[in-house]
Length: 175
Image 1 (cartoon, rainbow, N blue to C red):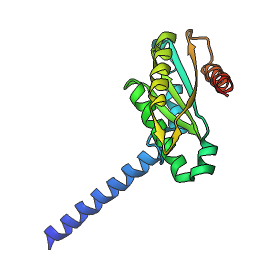
Image 2 (image 1 turned 135 degrees about the horizontal axis):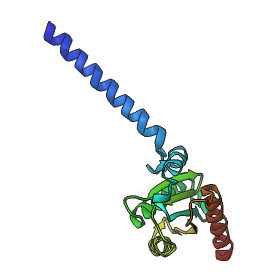
Image 3 (image 1 turned 90 degrees about the vertical axis):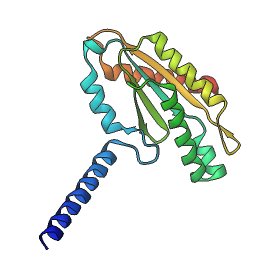
């Protein structure tokens, strides 16, 4: 009887631990893509915004045509397009880069110790992978914008805004 009680207690502790791990994972990850979420990214940006991490790059990415895909093929295909975009971003970046779904169809890549040349190379890899990726008959396309923090006095929020503006310029140029 004692062994039964001990086994049940261990089973309950294991089950509770698994549930806590699941909640912890869900609190920092996007449920659809498995990427980090905005909350996690903002905490990491604050933590890593140090002189030792300079230069720091940020890439903003926006999935082009998601509304059109959702309207033409349905939200399931739109979700698949978001998942494919996430895979492209993961496969184009380095292990130390932090990739997050910023919201909706926007993604942010945080690049510690990254030069402008390195950020452009990552954008190029993303572009190349997008050109060969289709979901249904729809080509996958991401508008990208990058910006680099080179000095400790620069505000990281301003760098993020600059990357966002560059992404919108790219999006307009594509149209």
